[in-house]
Length: 115
Length: 220
Image 1 (spheres, rainbow over the protein chains, first blue to last red):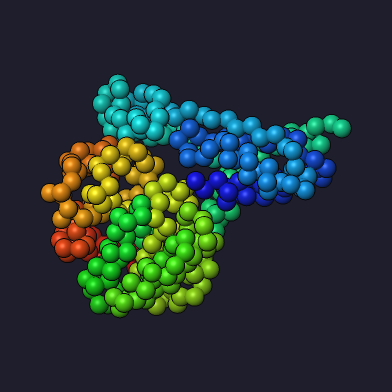
Image 2 (tube, rainbow over the protein chains, first blue to last red):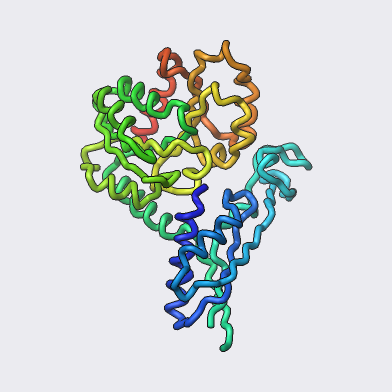
């Protein structure tokens, strides 16, 4: 729902680093956004296209890597995959509810490809 | 032209995180306890704020920042109850961010406050993603919304530490299952403090006030 301010942050990060590296054009942007994060790929692309118009990032391809949800038990160290529906489930190995999120909440601009 | 790949690994919301850290430092310097209150629209955030202001010990100096897409209705309700309120209109944004809150905080004398309640925009999705430099994140869930909310909006329940389960006076008229709700909430967040209350009927507010007063004291 909050794609516009998030995409504006992405755009600012991209432009800042493109300038520092004397880019004439941004070709590609690689994002890493965890499976648990509420961000719709299609809207990220649309808003970016809108914000980047007339800038050196216009036409840049956006690639979004979605790391799956991975949980680790604090008691027995078991690891298992989770999604939105099963995030609160106990450890499948020992039944403990003391668990930590390993992946699934990533929210980073991983890299940019520039010319 | 050669294409060069530059590794960044930068958090997308790094500006908000930096702004939130600055705010947190300001709050700590002034010894003010900041509660970020979140919920879906209509769960009763403003009602809880109003009832809280009425019941807090008089020596706790409090201000309220009301976040809303538009209108000053909530700030006016708080002021009508004798509270000090500032309104932030987000003009469409579905959440408050640290920069918006910072501009409102600039209008307050933080040193003269013990408690600042920030009422976020009514929304169970977005506000959870944006840190505000707060000491505590709380949420309000009303029984009219159904006990399946923790399963539908898990992130909010993992990002908050206190839950006011409001409108318990309506329980006889709903299918809301309090124990199923508690179980679902605690499965997501075993440390969640849960208070069952009704702002309208003024039930169950004493324990909430007691908990909040203790938290404010520990921050000063």
